[in-house]
Image 1 (cartoon, helix red, strand yellow):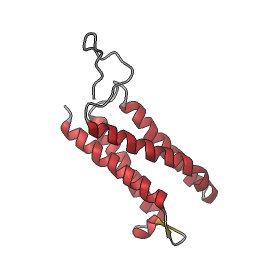
Image 2: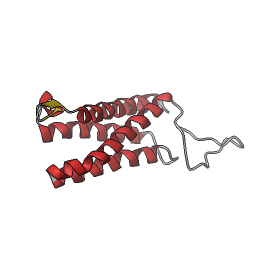
Image 3: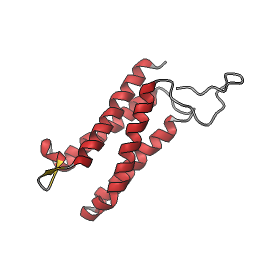
Image 4: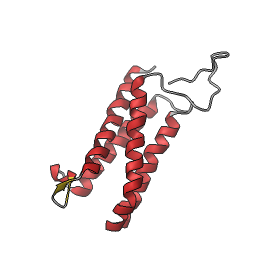
Length: 136
């Protein structure tokens, strides 16, 4: 990632856009899962207050990660942090719902929100590892 001003090639901008198209895909996936977690937090809070708080923190974590990614403060090591965070949130579903395909079901029906959030989190993890290995 690099943000270069057209004047002198300096990186004095507050926003640093991705130099690789995969970066945009990772941003989109992180924003989708972050917003979905925030939207679903009140419903999760109705079942379990701790779950609701974790949903809020997870949503803010993904959105905060996007904000950091778009700044000059991002560095290559943070790709691994992003991948680990995404993988941890995928594993968390199974910790709370059970280690089987049933984790994606709610009251006997496939839970599309669980599927969407976990797919987008997997995209973030895979994309972050890819960007870690390809960016210098």
